[in-house]
Length: 311
Image (cartoon, rainbow, N blue to C red; front, top):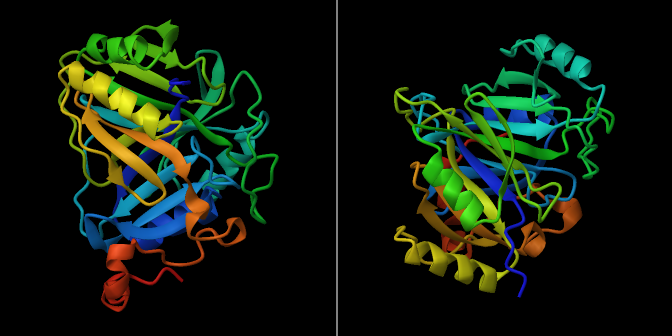
């Protein structure tokens, strides 16, 4: 059995206003709206999924938009930024687009030899657009305003800011099969050899820095790809043997999940590739309907009455 972890599956963050979040990620950033459903633990709240043209793992950013959520605070013990890969020559396009939309951003810079552009989404989530040293050939989602020449391809990296990186690095290397690939000052970049588009995990060591607070504009958790249930069971057992508290398998309809907190305090998820987002909508119809778990279908009218209209 091939038990390799093949990189990031999805990243989940917390937003405030649902309409604002939807507009920003579909119109301004040009991501595909892959799935509109609800929070399985709070069905009166949306759960949005954004991704590339096919909604493949490694491109999926999801949000819980809680309308009255307080803003979080970046700090240690949390994931502090997410990064997308974009094509060579597209940074000027994105600069102009962010300026036109009055988005807060920093001037382009370089990290590990790659040009990147940092900006904040409407809730303050830190996002980076990076031109990777090797061309990213994943199929993008195109819109009238954002064509293939500029569109995002999927995750390039996610950054974890930690008081001490060593326990987290040991987990990534000894259990998940990641390798330290680059290092500069207090930033350590880990990658998986199992997938060229797996997405890097950057660990930033910030000893003595205040602990962050996960709320609006924060990453809630990051999920790693499991090929199948057998692989997920294998890693769940390894994590339990390591003394980490691991949940039972939970059915999230589009994947099956196991959660645990890694040694640095960040919530990790192990998510299976199957069954995928076309289990209840065709590829062409992804994101066009409100899809509910079977157990909530009988309460559809009540749930829809509580959810804000997006259009």
